[in-house]
Length: 466
Image (cartoon, rainbow, N blue to C red; front, top):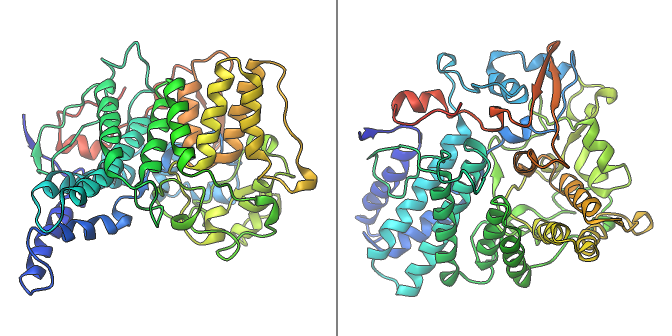
């Protein structure tokens, strides 16, 4: 059955933009069907950047203290999704609460905009075939990235044994507003992600002037990330190599004394960012949405690490209503005045390589890549190289380093999902909210967020997660 779907609040806006362009073109400013129109659409980078933030709230990066001012504020119904995410509820956005999932909406908006480019550019006028291929390639990278984020939010973690039958997310590849939204398999969606990225590579430049525009380095990095979450460590390592061959610069945090927009580069020009993507909701460190860091994470991070010194702050900085004893909060995005990057990066590629080596019993190379990163994360006087006694030890060190490097930037939740069935990392998480204890077991369905009830009401063919 084909139904009109409204899970994209901006679907009409995307298509309406095309009409708006036509109206303007009749005034002589733009030409109908010209390739330049699509370049303008892609240059509106905010339409392609937004990803999920609910995983950060559910992850063990974050910890609320019962009875804290922050927690009391979150009892307000306006923050229902926040406390539902934090306590791993089966329904984050109940239908009767008149709330919608802006994570889902924003990501499918990106897919809509991308589909406009992919489907319309080949028949546009005014550009060469190479020009058209470049625009389509950029759009395919954005589309692939978005599906990868959707899959690691609303579908089960990839399992080769069940991927052909596990439910993926609705796959929309054309920009029509009338089409079936049945969920294809996890395997089918991952195949589409990989095909988009591989098809994109030939049409992309090696690098772009701004990190908001996809490049070959972006596509290789997305492939490395995709294969990591498919547990294909050999392919992930190979594509990480390809990305690092094009960009491998690290920022030396040891030389920075305080982080602000003058001392630290913004996303679009950050040399570590391979493709700029941001968490839904904007800057995190404002009450009550500020992300209070868990005691466990702070213990792993340590106070001598510059990521602690520069990217976290005490509670009193967040709000005068919070006391200094209220813990440490993620602060990087607020300090530099823009949303945090959740897109692929140079450090991510380095740690993908480190994990590959650890999983292939090459302890020396695993630690080499970990320490190459850590040298740029400490003041020279504080840096101490890490060592591992075995491949098992090396793998734990790699995963811990991922926690230090990517806290509050989406990937910890993804890692919790993919590692939950490995004996070395398997655990049951517990947390308290309002005096009630909540648990997340390794086999819990709550590792997969529910699809918004509002979208299912409009499109009954979308099957809900358990």
